[in-house]
Length: 232
Image 1: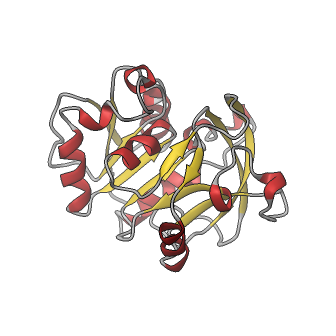
Image 2: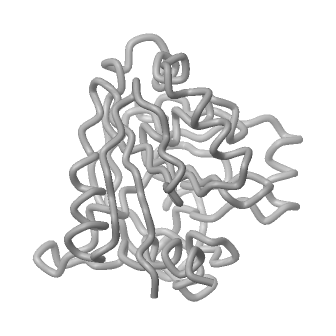
């Protein structure tokens, strides 16, 4: 298996970049570099990660200032050329602001910051989830105040039609209902990908569930899936 080249983008206010770096570099033993928001994306990079946190302090809309940064157009170009892009939490919000993913993230229905573990039902028909079983239920932590996914009816219809919904909040047995929806997201959506299948945004944090010391390694297959894809 060849080593894959990851880059984790840092914006002022990002705070999950070290978690992603540690998982890829120290646990999975693949190449990973930090990429400051004013830098260019090296040609060698296979996968970009936009981590969670509070880019630019979450002033204005979450992710909106980051979408106007120097690296923004370079992220769009990288994605349009087929490069793999992962947006986690604030990274998901940034990807919607960049219009690389449809819809937007609103304030949680409770209007409260949520920090807890949630069950997720997985669609494994993607380069990001192929190492899971289809319909498998895992548990990952969430930590957000604006994770309530919203899109118009046509967009939701297209997401379903094109099999773009990758993670859905569920009960432990996989049932998807209002009770298992922590933030009010339409159809319990926790993560989606673009039509091309190379860009994913998700609110849960797989990088925080990759070591037995945390009693949870369910996030590892997320990163293993993308490594597998780039080794095919």
